[in-house]
Amino acid sequence: MDFTTMDARAYRGLNAEQFEERRSLVLSLAQEPPADATMERMDAIDSEITIITDEMERRNKLAEARNQKAVEVVGGAGKVVGKAADPATPQVRVKKDNSLGRRVWDQLQERSYSRGERFQLGNVAFRAATDPQADSQLGDAKTLGYYADELTMTDTRIREGYRRPLTIWDLFNHESTEKDAVAYYVEGAFEGSAGMTAELGAFKQIHVAAPERKTESLKKVTAIWKQSDEILTDAPRFVSHVNSRAAYNLDTVVEDQLVMGDGTGDNLTGITNASGILTATASAYDLAFIESLLAKKTAIRKATPNFNVDTLLVADEDYDTMQTLKNSSDQYVLGGPVGIVYGNNVTVGDVLWRTIRIVPTPALTSGTSILGAFKAGATIYEHVTGRRFDTGYDGDDFSHGRVSFRAYQRLALAVEYPAAFCKYTVG
Image (cartoon, rainbow, N blue to C red; front, side, top):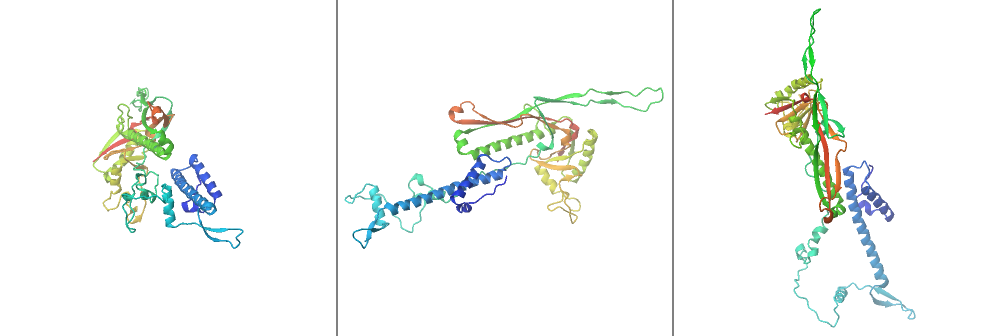
């Protein structure tokens, strides 16, 4: 999306035709955003709409001031200050009376006082000319806080709170389905073995057990919320913020389930609770732990169709511990703050034993890590409907001016090769 923002100063330099062209362009982009528009670009467009609104108000005030001045020159109140030389054509020069007395008299006339009437002012607190004006001196509740509001620029964008990185969903293989459940077969046990046999000797007997059928039902993650009709029409930016935050919340729940789901009730069976995965223990996230990964990498390759380990999933806190890990020469194992190893500027990075990428996540509790061939060992089956967002009326929503929003997603995690994963308990 090619769009260059303009500030308030630039708008003041536009003539009426240029201003109207720019205004039409920005409003069209806000109503129908381009497909490639980023959230940052949309925020810039929204900010420019505020600038356009302020500039329109300024231009309208200038136009009103010009019109008022024209009325005063043509037909405003004035007094005769001189006459033309020719009495046959009595022309006059008019000078507007802006004196304090004139203004006070005009105000008295607005209050229906005449010159013959007497009036008095009661309960008036006169202040010295040097006393500062304060909000508390404004008696009318409608104007309370006026100066504070007038001198404050309000930016309506919402500053987001913590958003954890979503790193787990893309680790797995992905498939789609129209069904309510996914079934697959696991190779049965192999009994006996071939062997060397003498002439006329009995052949060595083997037996291949029938494949075992596994079934995973699709589970559903859901959320529902409501908005008033007024919010929908008056604050579309806020509604968009709520909707995006709800979608993010669904994503975090899904990632927690993929890793730690216990399989009970409506929960998925996450990797850490899958039956048949390998297990290992370590005393700490130290060099011994890193060296043990190499042995488990080989064990996984031998327990699967030669799968290569691609990921070490660790908790955020444990990743920080690994970042500060040093060897006996007081060198950072993972490169340290600037990636210097033995005095050389070497970028070690977060890849162990050439293929194992370290992925930190808040979905794991400290002390638990997962080593595995994620792409080859498990598959996320998502329903073809994907992530759904629906709106409608629930209960008495219609009669109370509310709209219900709901979001949901159906998916299953099939750990087709449990031996492709090893759960570490550390510490």
